[in-house]
Image 1 (cartoon, rainbow over the protein chains, first blue to last red):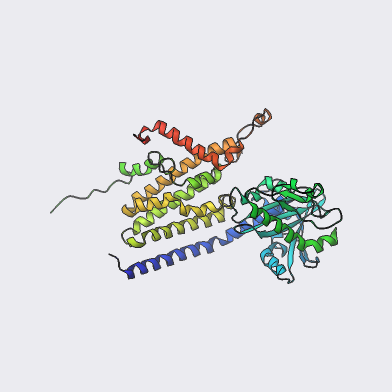
Image 2: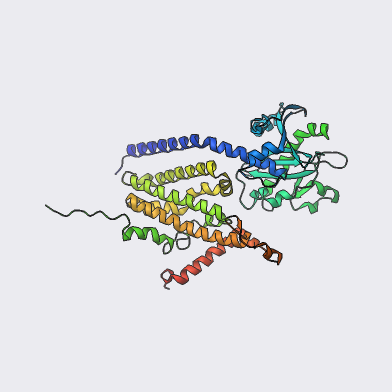
Length: 245
Length: 218
């Protein structure tokens, strides 16, 4: 028979060993993981601009070749810093914590957000990173706008842990491809964002369909999350976009 | 005085080999014990995540089995399930961290399912049923065997699903381009989880056809 004291000691020592083991592993593996996250971010930015043949192996190289400017903009739409040097991964824009900046925005405080300029076939594309909340955790992605800062060239989305088969479908090509050639301003120049419409864009009036995409069946909360994320983040870039259109 | 010397059992005695081989067929965790079905459906749309998942499960079952077997005489029975869970959870988190560091793409595809290895009944089942009562070496073999049995089925399902659903194997296009031009289409249903369940059913059917011992008598 084991005494209560033994059981408590046993459990205590076991937990301490497990904790020590896991924290050591986490510390040792952190640099590798951070590098992977950075590469993943580059892949997302390049993929949204429809750059072909991006893989984890060539992402850093392609990112340095294709991205010409990394701009930090503030809440008034002014470019605070424009980075054009090599080693684009060291730019301030690339290392901005979107979550913290968007929180500042929600508190009505000044904020700074990144904007990437990509040269593709002589055209300037503007890639805006977006971030919001899904059902279970954060969702994020990139929106690439053509040089008119209105037409979408492509988007990518990703998520931390949306339901596989339902909300997680936002990161599939089928969902992302819907955004191509949609516009974020109407003919009068009013900001419309892109609406993610439950039940399909067929429900929208004819001339609004250019600003909408179909939501995902069974993934309503994630779809709404995408809708709100686009509206919220693109709105923060409006001062800059309006100056440069 | 007794002169009898206890003979050491060879590492791969008939009994030990059985531990490795039985889970592949007669006591397969998926097709016979029907454990771990959830992940078998979820990660088998492509071969690569299925293989990584199998390796992860083999690692976790084998190492947890050994750890629990080494500790088996000191584990207080009243908290044995907690101890088993702590060991499994530690191993799974380690695997998850390593995947994130070295095969990030695959770890993203597997998403929550690596974490869910913790709840895979196969592992806890083996700890409770085998490792708690056996020495480390047989426990290790039992873990490897059950992991392999699980992995074997996963790979077979993933092979069929990727071939018929995407026309490729391990990401390489297998079905030639001309077939598509002649009107061949990938079966989109194969990509969806329900088809995986049907494939599991077919595997069970085939297995029982060849292994008559598995068929219930009544």
